[in-house]
Amino acid sequence: MSKAIELRQERHAISLKMNEALDRSDLQEWKRLDEIQEGLRIKIEATERTSALNTELGQVRNAELPNIVGGSYTHDPFMDQREFVPGEMRDRGRIAEIRSSRAYAREFDNYLRTGEVSAQQRELRVLGAASGADGATLVPQGFEAELETKIKYWGGVTKICRHLQTATGNPMPWPTLDDTSNTGEFLAEAAGVGTADPTFSNITFGATLVSSKQVKVSVQLEQDSAFDMAGLLSDAFGERLGRVLDSAYYLGDGSGTYGNITGLLTALQTAGGRSVSAIGANNNSGNSGDTEVNSIGTDDFSNLIDKLDYAYQKPTNKFLFNQTTKNALRKVKDRYGRPIWEVSLAQGEPDTIFGYGFQVDNAVANIAPSAVSVVFGDFSKFVIRDVLGFTLVRFNELYMPNYQRAYQAFMRTDAKLLQSAAFSYLSHPLS
Image (cartoon, rainbow, N blue to C red; front, side):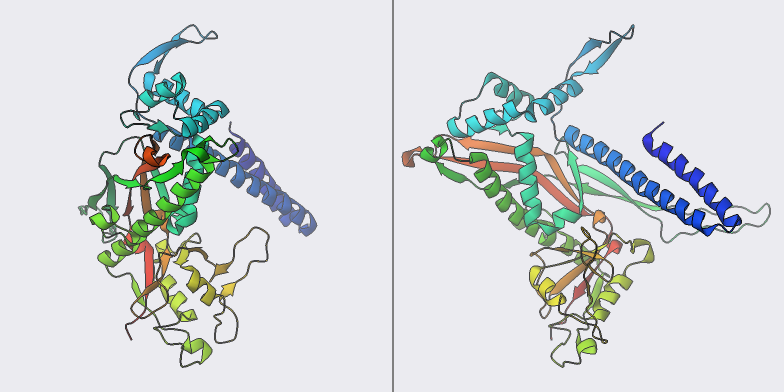
């Protein structure tokens, strides 16, 4: 029996005792038991969340590693049988274990400085299908995680949307279903039943190749043992990839300009029906300058929330706007002089607007005529697909006349909007 189930059973037993105390009008005992069950509730949520997170991270780790064919048999000394272990699972586990080790991190650092590859690293290049490009190598998991963190730092959308990692870059159909126009029916005795088929469709994810561009480093700098090569490269690659992907994930128009990625705002505008016309803060402030073209008011946020069908009005929804808009919103007050920015008094809890969280992303436009300054909704309905992990290439000869080497990171990605009805956005009029 899992720990979460045991805790749930214990909480259920407490609830029965609470009912008994209530029947006896023993409110003091009821309050004592209520504190116990509340503690169990928090512990249950933490236990189940940790279990779900471990499962998710395990899936991501497996998805990012390449497919390897073949297999072998292993013998369990405690069981009189042999178990077949597919080569794919065996090699993935071995690669993951090596890539997460300190020894491999040291070898990777040595590779960055000298270009020398050990037998172990050469083997991993073959297993990881990373050979074929001069100097290509699998990066350690710590380096890759640092890159991912920096990309999310620069791209606000990537922090709050849903992520999916796949082992290959083949076109990936994502099935969708729309049954909102259908209802059930009441039947008379022995009457025939009607039929109503839902509308099925699919969204296909691709895999656009993205490059960090080259980072040139002098050989003298590489040879300086006190210099953090991995830190410099992860900073440079993370910032560059974060900037270009942030624009693509939000503004991408599906053309070559953004690597065939259709961004969130473009997809919403194409779908239609999600726009909310800005009213401005004049109703709140009484200032004639706070018009709909250059300000945001309380009613604008109410209208953004109300635009969503109640099925999508979830407490986890968020507002998305840029840093300039955030600074302006901290000063906005309602007609009674109360700030709409709700400062959290609890440690570790973020500030909110109308009870909802927010995310800053500077790809979003400023408050201005004809601009879209705020997006609101359930960002789990916008999915980013990443293929495998990052590939790092070291160019040994290209810039050697200047006694330099170059490094470059590559990744493959795409993004799709699954459900436009889960979002709304604030449009300011032209004048």
